[in-house]
Image (cartoon, rainbow, N blue to C red; front, side, top):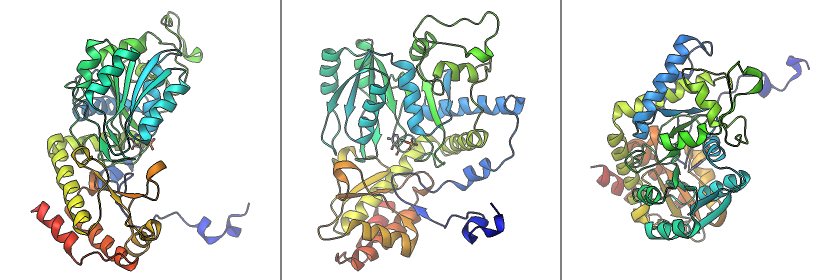
Length: 413
Ligand SMILES: Cc1ncc(COP(=O)(O)O)c(C=O)c1O
Protein backbone atom coordinates (compact mmCIF):
# COMPACT_ATOMS: atom_id res chain seq x y z
CA UNK A 1 0.00 0.00 0.00
CA UNK A 2 1.38 3.39 -1.01
CA UNK A 3 0.88 5.95 1.77
CA UNK A 4 0.47 8.84 -0.71
CA UNK A 5 -2.44 7.07 -2.39
CA UNK A 6 -4.44 6.86 0.83
CA UNK A 7 -7.38 9.27 1.24
CA UNK A 8 -6.44 12.48 3.11
CA UNK A 9 -8.35 11.41 6.24
CA UNK A 10 -6.08 8.38 6.57
CA UNK A 11 -2.91 10.33 5.90
CA UNK A 12 -3.48 12.86 8.66
CA UNK A 13 -3.26 12.35 12.41
CA UNK A 14 -6.64 11.73 14.03
CA UNK A 15 -7.69 14.80 15.98
CA UNK A 16 -10.92 14.32 17.92
CA UNK A 17 -13.31 17.28 17.84
CA UNK A 18 -13.85 19.21 21.07
CA UNK A 19 -16.78 17.76 23.00
CA UNK A 20 -18.48 18.19 26.35
CA UNK A 21 -19.39 14.63 27.33
CA UNK A 22 -22.52 14.84 29.49
CA UNK A 23 -23.73 11.29 29.06
CA UNK A 24 -23.58 8.36 31.48
CA UNK A 25 -19.86 7.92 30.76
CA UNK A 26 -17.28 8.16 29.41
CA UNK A 27 -16.99 11.81 30.34
CA UNK A 28 -14.53 14.49 29.36
CA UNK A 29 -11.20 13.39 30.78
CA UNK A 30 -9.53 15.52 33.44
CA UNK A 31 -6.60 17.30 31.66
CA UNK A 32 -4.30 16.32 34.53
CA UNK A 33 -5.02 12.66 33.76
CA UNK A 34 -4.33 13.17 30.04
CA UNK A 35 -1.08 14.87 30.95
CA UNK A 36 -0.06 12.02 33.27
CA UNK A 37 -0.77 9.54 30.49
CA UNK A 38 1.54 11.33 28.07
CA UNK A 39 4.68 10.47 30.08
CA UNK A 40 7.28 8.14 28.59
CA UNK A 41 7.20 4.40 29.32
CA UNK A 42 9.61 2.68 31.68
CA UNK A 43 10.39 -1.02 31.80
CA UNK A 44 7.92 -3.33 33.45
CA UNK A 45 10.18 -4.16 36.40
CA UNK A 46 12.02 -0.85 36.56
CA UNK A 47 12.09 0.22 40.24
CA UNK A 48 10.26 3.43 39.27
CA UNK A 49 7.52 1.35 37.66
CA UNK A 50 7.05 -1.02 40.59
CA UNK A 51 7.09 2.01 42.91
CA UNK A 52 4.33 3.56 40.80
CA UNK A 53 2.33 0.34 41.08
CA UNK A 54 2.73 0.32 44.88
CA UNK A 55 1.71 3.98 45.00
CA UNK A 56 -1.39 3.21 42.97
CA UNK A 57 -2.26 0.44 45.44
CA UNK A 58 -1.97 2.86 48.35
CA UNK A 59 -3.94 5.60 46.60
CA UNK A 60 -6.80 3.26 45.66
CA UNK A 61 -7.06 2.09 49.27
CA UNK A 62 -8.02 5.70 49.96
CA UNK A 63 -10.51 5.80 47.08
CA UNK A 64 -12.15 2.51 48.07
CA UNK A 65 -11.94 3.38 51.79
CA UNK A 66 -10.29 0.15 52.74
CA UNK A 67 -7.29 -1.26 54.53
CA UNK A 68 -7.25 -4.22 52.10
CA UNK A 69 -3.73 -5.24 51.19
CA UNK A 70 -5.05 -6.58 47.89
CA UNK A 71 -6.02 -3.34 46.24
CA UNK A 72 -4.67 -3.16 42.68
CA UNK A 73 -5.50 -2.55 39.04
CA UNK A 74 -6.69 -4.96 36.37
CA UNK A 75 -5.75 -3.90 32.84
CA UNK A 76 -9.12 -3.90 31.12
CA UNK A 77 -12.24 -1.86 31.02
CA UNK A 78 -14.60 -2.06 34.01
CA UNK A 79 -16.34 -5.10 32.56
CA UNK A 80 -13.04 -6.95 32.78
CA UNK A 81 -12.77 -6.02 36.46
CA UNK A 82 -16.18 -7.59 37.04
CA UNK A 83 -15.21 -10.66 35.09
CA UNK A 84 -11.91 -11.01 36.96
CA UNK A 85 -13.69 -10.92 40.34
CA UNK A 86 -16.43 -13.33 39.36
CA UNK A 87 -14.31 -15.87 37.48
CA UNK A 88 -11.76 -15.88 40.30
CA UNK A 89 -14.31 -16.25 43.11
CA UNK A 90 -16.85 -18.55 41.47
CA UNK A 91 -16.24 -22.17 40.60
CA UNK A 92 -18.61 -24.10 38.34
CA UNK A 93 -21.65 -25.14 40.33
CA UNK A 94 -21.31 -22.38 42.96
CA UNK A 95 -24.49 -20.52 43.74
CA UNK A 96 -24.55 -16.74 43.29
CA UNK A 97 -27.32 -14.31 44.13
CA UNK A 98 -27.71 -11.15 42.00
CA UNK A 99 -30.18 -8.33 42.67
CA UNK A 100 -31.04 -7.07 39.18
CA UNK A 101 -32.30 -3.52 38.81
CA UNK A 102 -30.99 -2.78 35.33
CA UNK A 103 -28.59 -3.69 32.55
CA UNK A 104 -25.52 -4.02 34.71
CA UNK A 105 -27.18 -6.41 37.16
CA UNK A 106 -28.05 -8.47 34.11
CA UNK A 107 -24.41 -8.25 33.03
CA UNK A 108 -23.38 -9.81 36.36
CA UNK A 109 -25.77 -12.71 35.74
CA UNK A 110 -24.34 -13.27 32.25
CA UNK A 111 -20.75 -13.26 33.46
CA UNK A 112 -21.60 -15.54 36.41
CA UNK A 113 -23.38 -17.96 34.05
CA UNK A 114 -20.26 -18.11 31.88
CA UNK A 115 -18.28 -19.00 35.04
CA UNK A 116 -20.57 -22.02 35.31
CA UNK A 117 -22.23 -20.72 38.46
CA UNK A 118 -25.86 -21.36 39.36
CA UNK A 119 -27.33 -17.89 39.13
CA UNK A 120 -30.30 -16.76 41.24
CA UNK A 121 -31.73 -13.28 40.89
CA UNK A 122 -33.91 -10.81 42.72
CA UNK A 123 -35.56 -8.64 40.09
CA UNK A 124 -36.90 -5.17 40.77
CA UNK A 125 -38.51 -2.94 38.13
CA UNK A 126 -36.11 -0.60 36.30
CA UNK A 127 -36.18 2.69 38.21
CA UNK A 128 -36.33 1.07 41.66
CA UNK A 129 -33.82 -0.46 44.08
CA UNK A 130 -33.81 -3.65 46.11
CA UNK A 131 -34.78 -3.69 49.82
CA UNK A 132 -32.56 -5.41 52.44
CA UNK A 133 -35.50 -7.65 53.43
CA UNK A 134 -35.63 -9.01 49.86
CA UNK A 135 -31.92 -9.78 50.00
CA UNK A 136 -32.16 -11.41 53.46
CA UNK A 137 -35.02 -13.62 52.33
CA UNK A 138 -33.22 -14.64 49.13
CA UNK A 139 -29.93 -15.30 50.95
CA UNK A 140 -31.74 -17.68 53.30
CA UNK A 141 -33.52 -19.41 50.43
CA UNK A 142 -30.63 -19.68 47.96
CA UNK A 143 -27.69 -20.00 50.40
CA UNK A 144 -25.21 -18.66 47.82
CA UNK A 145 -21.44 -18.47 48.01
CA UNK A 146 -21.55 -14.91 46.71
CA UNK A 147 -23.91 -11.94 46.67
CA UNK A 148 -23.06 -9.90 43.54
CA UNK A 149 -24.38 -6.34 43.34
CA UNK A 150 -24.12 -3.15 41.32
CA UNK A 151 -24.16 0.10 43.27
CA UNK A 152 -24.96 2.66 40.58
CA UNK A 153 -26.66 1.07 37.59
CA UNK A 154 -26.22 3.71 34.89
CA UNK A 155 -28.87 2.05 32.73
CA UNK A 156 -31.55 3.20 35.18
CA UNK A 157 -29.60 5.88 37.13
CA UNK A 158 -30.54 4.16 40.41
CA UNK A 159 -28.12 3.85 43.33
CA UNK A 160 -28.57 0.67 45.35
CA UNK A 161 -28.14 1.21 49.15
CA UNK A 162 -25.58 -1.37 50.26
CA UNK A 163 -24.88 -0.54 53.87
CA UNK A 164 -26.96 -3.39 55.31
CA UNK A 165 -25.98 -6.09 52.83
CA UNK A 166 -22.54 -6.72 54.34
CA UNK A 167 -24.01 -7.66 57.72
CA UNK A 168 -26.56 -9.94 56.07
CA UNK A 169 -23.73 -11.66 54.19
CA UNK A 170 -21.43 -12.02 57.24
CA UNK A 171 -24.22 -13.55 59.31
CA UNK A 172 -24.60 -16.22 56.62
CA UNK A 173 -20.93 -16.58 55.65
CA UNK A 174 -21.62 -15.28 52.13
CA UNK A 175 -19.03 -13.32 50.12
CA UNK A 176 -20.15 -9.83 49.09
CA UNK A 177 -19.11 -8.30 45.72
CA UNK A 178 -20.01 -4.92 44.22
CA UNK A 179 -19.47 -3.23 40.85
CA UNK A 180 -19.14 0.45 41.74
CA UNK A 181 -17.81 1.57 38.35
CA UNK A 182 -20.39 4.28 37.83
CA UNK A 183 -20.84 5.48 41.38
CA UNK A 184 -17.55 5.55 43.28
CA UNK A 185 -16.32 9.04 44.19
CA UNK A 186 -19.68 10.51 43.16
CA UNK A 187 -21.75 8.71 45.81
CA UNK A 188 -20.80 7.48 49.29
CA UNK A 189 -18.99 4.14 49.13
CA UNK A 190 -17.37 2.29 52.04
CA UNK A 191 -15.59 -0.96 51.26
CA UNK A 192 -14.63 -1.81 54.84
CA UNK A 193 -17.50 0.05 56.52
CA UNK A 194 -20.07 -1.90 54.51
CA UNK A 195 -18.33 -5.26 54.82
CA UNK A 196 -17.51 -5.76 51.15
CA UNK A 197 -15.23 -8.64 50.12
CA UNK A 198 -14.61 -7.76 46.48
CA UNK A 199 -15.15 -4.52 44.61
CA UNK A 200 -14.32 -3.47 41.07
CA UNK A 201 -14.55 -0.09 39.36
CA UNK A 202 -13.54 1.86 36.26
CA UNK A 203 -12.04 5.28 35.64
CA UNK A 204 -14.39 6.75 33.08
CA UNK A 205 -17.13 8.06 35.37
CA UNK A 206 -16.62 10.06 38.57
CA UNK A 207 -12.87 9.34 38.65
CA UNK A 208 -12.51 11.51 35.53
CA UNK A 209 -10.24 9.23 33.47
CA UNK A 210 -10.54 7.18 30.29
CA UNK A 211 -11.81 3.64 30.33
CA UNK A 212 -9.15 0.96 30.18
CA UNK A 213 -8.22 0.03 33.74
CA UNK A 214 -10.29 -1.52 36.50
CA UNK A 215 -9.33 -0.80 40.12
CA UNK A 216 -10.12 -3.83 42.31
CA UNK A 217 -10.00 -4.44 46.05
CA UNK A 218 -10.31 -7.76 47.90
CA UNK A 219 -10.81 -8.49 51.58
CA UNK A 220 -8.53 -11.06 53.21
CA UNK A 221 -11.47 -13.46 53.09
CA UNK A 222 -11.90 -13.06 49.31
CA UNK A 223 -8.14 -13.12 48.75
CA UNK A 224 -7.91 -16.43 50.65
CA UNK A 225 -10.65 -17.97 48.46
CA UNK A 226 -8.74 -16.86 45.35
CA UNK A 227 -5.31 -17.93 46.65
CA UNK A 228 -6.73 -21.43 47.13
CA UNK A 229 -6.95 -21.54 43.33
CA UNK A 230 -3.43 -20.18 42.71
CA UNK A 231 -1.63 -21.56 39.71
CA UNK A 232 1.76 -20.55 38.31
CA UNK A 233 1.87 -20.39 34.52
CA UNK A 234 3.88 -23.25 33.00
CA UNK A 235 6.39 -21.05 31.15
CA UNK A 236 7.47 -19.08 34.22
CA UNK A 237 7.30 -21.86 36.81
CA UNK A 238 10.42 -22.12 38.98
CA UNK A 239 11.56 -25.03 41.11
CA UNK A 240 9.42 -25.23 44.24
CA UNK A 241 6.44 -23.43 42.67
CA UNK A 242 3.38 -25.43 43.59
CA UNK A 243 -0.24 -24.87 42.67
CA UNK A 244 -2.74 -24.50 45.48
CA UNK A 245 -5.30 -27.28 45.79
CA UNK A 246 -8.39 -25.48 44.47
CA UNK A 247 -9.76 -25.64 40.96
CA UNK A 248 -7.69 -23.55 38.51
CA UNK A 249 -9.35 -20.26 37.57
CA UNK A 250 -10.93 -20.65 34.14
CA UNK A 251 -9.50 -17.50 32.60
CA UNK A 252 -5.83 -16.79 32.15
CA UNK A 253 -6.07 -13.05 31.55
CA UNK A 254 -8.52 -12.45 34.43
CA UNK A 255 -6.94 -14.89 36.90
CA UNK A 256 -6.74 -12.69 39.99
CA UNK A 257 -4.42 -15.15 41.75
CA UNK A 258 -1.88 -14.62 38.95
CA UNK A 259 -2.53 -10.87 38.87
CA UNK A 260 -1.96 -10.76 42.65
CA UNK A 261 1.37 -12.56 42.16
CA UNK A 262 2.22 -9.89 39.60
CA UNK A 263 1.30 -7.04 41.99
CA UNK A 264 3.02 -8.71 44.99
CA UNK A 265 6.71 -8.51 45.93
CA UNK A 266 7.18 -11.71 43.90
CA UNK A 267 6.36 -9.72 40.72
CA UNK A 268 5.64 -12.90 38.79
CA UNK A 269 5.21 -11.89 35.19
CA UNK A 270 1.66 -11.97 33.86
CA UNK A 271 0.65 -9.51 31.13
CA UNK A 272 2.68 -6.50 30.00
CA UNK A 273 1.48 -3.68 32.20
CA UNK A 274 -0.60 -1.02 30.41
CA UNK A 275 1.84 1.59 31.64
CA UNK A 276 0.10 4.71 30.30
CA UNK A 277 -3.18 3.55 31.84
CA UNK A 278 -1.39 2.98 35.15
CA UNK A 279 -0.09 6.57 35.08
CA UNK A 280 -3.63 7.76 34.34
CA UNK A 281 -5.21 5.63 37.05
CA UNK A 282 -2.68 6.81 39.61
CA UNK A 283 -3.48 10.43 38.72
CA UNK A 284 -7.26 9.82 38.94
CA UNK A 285 -6.88 8.52 42.49
CA UNK A 286 -4.46 11.29 43.44
CA UNK A 287 -6.90 13.94 42.21
CA UNK A 288 -9.81 12.33 44.10
CA UNK A 289 -7.86 12.18 47.35
CA UNK A 290 -6.51 15.70 46.88
CA UNK A 291 -10.09 16.97 46.67
CA UNK A 292 -11.19 14.63 49.47
CA UNK A 293 -13.68 11.84 48.79
CA UNK A 294 -16.40 13.48 50.89
CA UNK A 295 -15.93 16.77 49.02
CA UNK A 296 -16.05 15.00 45.66
CA UNK A 297 -19.26 13.21 46.64
CA UNK A 298 -20.78 16.52 47.72
CA UNK A 299 -19.71 18.20 44.45
CA UNK A 300 -21.48 15.43 42.53
CA UNK A 301 -24.55 15.65 44.75
CA UNK A 302 -24.93 19.38 44.14
CA UNK A 303 -24.25 19.14 40.41
CA UNK A 304 -26.76 16.29 40.03
CA UNK A 305 -29.38 18.12 42.03
CA UNK A 306 -28.89 21.28 39.95
CA UNK A 307 -29.19 19.27 36.74
CA UNK A 308 -32.35 17.53 37.95
CA UNK A 309 -33.87 20.84 39.11
CA UNK A 310 -33.10 22.42 35.75
CA UNK A 311 -34.64 19.56 33.77
CA UNK A 312 -37.77 19.65 35.92
CA UNK A 313 -38.04 23.44 35.52
CA UNK A 314 -37.92 22.92 31.76
CA UNK A 315 -41.13 20.93 32.09
CA UNK A 316 -39.49 17.51 31.76
CA UNK A 317 -40.35 14.47 33.90
CA UNK A 318 -37.53 12.73 35.76
CA UNK A 319 -37.22 8.96 35.58
CA UNK A 320 -37.18 6.57 38.51
CA UNK A 321 -37.28 6.73 42.30
CA UNK A 322 -35.68 10.12 42.94
CA UNK A 323 -34.86 9.16 46.54
CA UNK A 324 -32.41 6.62 45.12
CA UNK A 325 -31.09 8.46 42.08
CA UNK A 326 -27.32 8.37 41.59
CA UNK A 327 -25.80 11.78 42.21
CA UNK A 328 -24.04 11.75 38.86
CA UNK A 329 -26.62 10.69 36.25
CA UNK A 330 -30.18 11.89 35.76
CA UNK A 331 -32.71 9.94 33.71
CA UNK A 332 -35.31 12.12 32.05
CA UNK A 333 -38.32 11.15 29.92
CA UNK A 334 -38.23 12.22 26.28
CA UNK A 335 -41.40 14.34 25.97
CA UNK A 336 -44.27 12.97 23.89
CA UNK A 337 -43.98 13.90 20.24
CA UNK A 338 -40.29 14.77 20.48
CA UNK A 339 -37.74 12.77 18.51
CA UNK A 340 -35.14 11.92 21.15
CA UNK A 341 -32.39 11.18 18.64
CA UNK A 342 -33.03 14.45 16.79
CA UNK A 343 -32.49 16.34 20.06
CA UNK A 344 -29.30 14.41 20.79
CA UNK A 345 -28.16 15.09 17.23
CA UNK A 346 -28.75 18.84 17.61
CA UNK A 347 -26.92 18.88 20.95
CA UNK A 348 -23.89 17.31 19.29
CA UNK A 349 -23.94 19.22 16.02
CA UNK A 350 -24.87 22.68 17.29
CA UNK A 351 -23.24 22.65 20.71
CA UNK A 352 -20.71 19.77 20.72
CA UNK A 353 -22.44 18.31 23.78
CA UNK A 354 -23.12 14.62 24.13
CA UNK A 355 -26.05 13.39 26.21
CA UNK A 356 -26.92 9.73 26.58
CA UNK A 357 -29.48 7.48 25.02
CA UNK A 358 -30.70 4.35 26.90
CA UNK A 359 -30.80 0.59 26.68
CA UNK A 360 -33.40 -2.16 26.66
CA UNK A 361 -36.87 -1.17 27.90
CA UNK A 362 -35.79 2.46 28.32
CA UNK A 363 -34.44 2.87 24.78
CA UNK A 364 -36.25 5.77 23.13
CA UNK A 365 -38.04 6.47 26.42
CA UNK A 366 -35.46 8.39 28.45
CA UNK A 367 -32.25 10.33 27.96
CA UNK A 368 -29.50 9.93 30.53
CA UNK A 369 -27.58 13.07 31.33
CA UNK A 370 -24.45 12.80 33.41
CA UNK A 371 -22.56 15.32 35.47
CA UNK A 372 -19.56 13.51 36.78
CA UNK A 373 -15.84 13.60 37.35
CA UNK A 374 -14.29 16.56 35.57
CA UNK A 375 -17.77 17.56 34.32
CA UNK A 376 -19.48 17.72 37.73
CA UNK A 377 -19.10 21.46 37.38
CA UNK A 378 -21.45 24.37 37.53
CA UNK A 379 -20.57 25.72 34.06
CA UNK A 380 -20.95 22.27 32.46
CA UNK A 381 -24.40 21.80 34.00
CA UNK A 382 -25.60 25.31 33.13
CA UNK A 383 -24.32 25.09 29.55
CA UNK A 384 -25.97 21.71 29.03
CA UNK A 385 -29.32 22.96 30.32
CA UNK A 386 -29.23 26.14 28.24
CA UNK A 387 -28.39 24.22 25.08
CA UNK A 388 -30.94 21.48 25.72
CA UNK A 389 -33.63 24.12 26.08
CA UNK A 390 -32.75 25.47 22.62
CA UNK A 391 -32.72 22.01 21.04
CA UNK A 392 -36.08 21.10 22.58
CA UNK A 393 -37.63 24.29 21.26
CA UNK A 394 -36.31 23.56 17.78
CA UNK A 395 -37.91 20.11 18.01
CA UNK A 396 -41.28 21.58 18.94
CA UNK A 397 -41.29 21.29 22.74
CA UNK A 398 -42.22 24.59 24.40
CA UNK A 399 -39.58 24.69 27.14
CA UNK A 400 -40.06 27.87 29.19
CA UNK A 401 -37.28 30.33 28.38
CA UNK A 402 -34.50 30.55 30.95
CA UNK A 403 -36.25 28.59 33.71
CA UNK A 404 -33.88 25.63 33.65
CA UNK A 405 -30.71 27.63 34.10
CA UNK A 406 -32.39 29.76 36.78
CA UNK A 407 -33.47 26.67 38.75
CA UNK A 408 -29.99 25.15 38.51
CA UNK A 409 -28.38 28.42 39.57
CA UNK A 410 -30.63 28.40 42.64
CA UNK A 411 -29.30 24.99 43.61
CA UNK A 412 -25.70 26.06 43.12
CA UNK A 413 -26.36 29.21 45.13
C1 LIG B 1 -22.29 0.14 36.39
C2 LIG B 1 -21.40 -0.20 35.26
N1 LIG B 1 -20.72 -1.35 35.31
C3 LIG B 1 -19.88 -1.72 34.32
C4 LIG B 1 -19.74 -0.94 33.20
C5 LIG B 1 -18.86 -1.45 32.09
O1 LIG B 1 -17.76 -0.65 31.94
P1 LIG B 1 -16.78 -0.79 30.69
O2 LIG B 1 -17.55 -0.31 29.52
O3 LIG B 1 -15.64 0.09 31.07
O4 LIG B 1 -16.36 -2.20 30.57
C6 LIG B 1 -20.42 0.26 33.10
C7 LIG B 1 -20.29 1.11 31.91
O5 LIG B 1 -21.07 1.97 31.63
C8 LIG B 1 -21.27 0.64 34.16
O6 LIG B 1 -21.99 1.78 34.11
